[in-house]
Amino acid sequence: MCGIVGYVGKQKASSIILEGLKRVEYRGYDSAGLAVLEKGAFTVLKKTGRVDNLVKLVAPRKFHATTGIGHTRWATHGGVTDANAHPHLSSDGKFAIIHNGVIENYVGMKQFLAGKGYTFQSETDTEALVNLIAYHFAKEPANGDRSRFLESVRKALLHVEGTYGIAVLCTECPDEIVGARKGSPLILGVGDGENILASDVSALVSRTQNVVYLKDGEVVHLTEKSFSLSTIQEQEEITPKIDRVSWKVEDAELGTFAHFMEKEIFEQPAALENTMRGRFSADASTAIFGGLNLTAGDLRQIDRLVFCACGTAWHACLVAEQLIERYARIPVEVEYASEFRYRNAPLDKNTLVFVVTQSGETLDTLEALREAKRKGYTVLAIVNVVGSTIARESDGGIYQHAGPEIGVASTKAFTSQLVVGAMLALYLGRLRDMSYSDGVEYVKALKQVPELIKAVLTQAPHIKAIAKRFSHHRDFLFLGRQSMFPIALEGALKLKEISYIHAEGYPAAEMKHGPIALISPDCPTVFFAPAGEMFPKLVSSIQEIKARKGQAIVITTTGAEFPPGLADERIDLPPCHEAILPILATIPVQLLSYYIAAELGRDVDKPRNLAKSVTVE
Figure 1 (tube, rainbow, N blue to C red):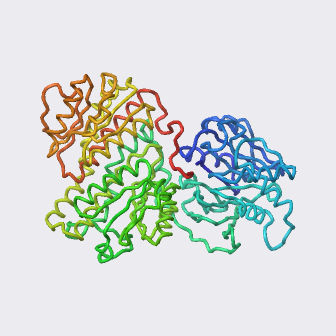
Figure 2: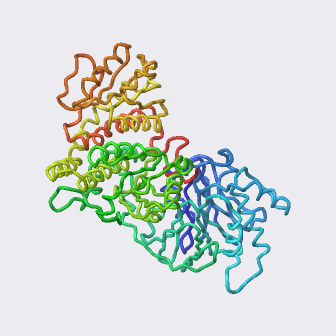
């Protein structure tokens, strides 16, 4: 997992690469480096830590090179050291490479190459690949019809087991870059007299909005004025499809906010409005989706749904499970995508599979999709990033349209997934036995979500004060029942991700079956207790906490009455339809986690050990 940027054109490559690396730093930030090609030789600068450390190394240099590659690393093979940072050079000095992914057979490659006299300076799997390219280049005869550089990369990749997104430079081809992908994203930005290669659209939108999304098994050869696409295996030329990015670089700017996470929390009313825009029927009684590629008749034949996702997206699927089973009466299973591929779970013939991922590049989720398709099942995707691998490989799906999300800890993408899940429950329910009037009430509730979130966000100062009060604690419990249980899991995850405080989410009724042993004045509980059928039981559980001298931060609905002193702190949500309650309940725990992390001085947007898009298994 990393950020890749390559540039070939007329401008100074180093400044463009550094700008791109800053925009993709959220993909990996253990170290950063760049290589530029000037006067027939490489200059490579790399440093552990953030891109700013690399900027300081580059600043005194007077680079004029117009071709270069840059990289931000999230360590897989080898520790976080300058030597293991990318780019890596072949031992003959002719090639430089940056790489995202994992080469599973690199040990055997290194042994073979060492026997041929190639040497290694790092612990990485990547260095084996760059030396293998050099080996094939030395063997490759000059051929006027095909690039020797391109063919050497292609032949080396035929021996690779694993995943990769790469960009390669060659001293003998000073104005060219070769890139290729298998399992890791790679995007070509087509500019005016320049071409850019990147792992993320955000790295290139300041230069161009015309892009080509590489598919698995494709290799691209680019110069400043042209590019060509072909397959790695068959060497077949491919006619490129140029797409246009719908958002601008300003959409990924921080603006007046302290962190991207804060910005994205407060963007949620607009983001969710975009998710819902144009997706309700003319009579406002149901949802409509244009990209499912299934008829109403097809969907009525479905007996079972399986959702596959990882992390935050998995929590969104748990909420969708509750809503779909309640309103559409269709059995739903939620699987960890990372386990689904290996479980060989029996699926009924009338099963529909959904995969859910913000980036559309999560490798575990991608492999779950491929496994389900391999077995003949229709797979639909809920994805935020247009043109992503999962969006392209699925049989249909729903774009979230939440806009770019830069903060590593997902906020607006998560609530957007909750909205899509709620709309899907409505859509499937109306295909089954949900009445027209119930549908109208449901749609009315969904349309109120942006304004209701704005109301919850007005409590930010109150939640900030709560965060300051509780930020010194090292353990938290998050408890909820029914659709609030997945939000408890999500709240605990958010706190862990960005503050490094240990937190656990549980169903509230399960507390007495073990977790109650943790209750003490030093372990506060965030308790979801909205008014409704379960309210008396929730109050009883809070009383069990208080009886053991635990502290309770209660998230409830306006007007809910508690015994005096039961809640140490209280956060109110507007009364609402139960289908949208999980969406509103998410906002307080996002703010609580954010403000605790900020109070502790954490690097909120780039928490340690995490990366935004997990493209390794």
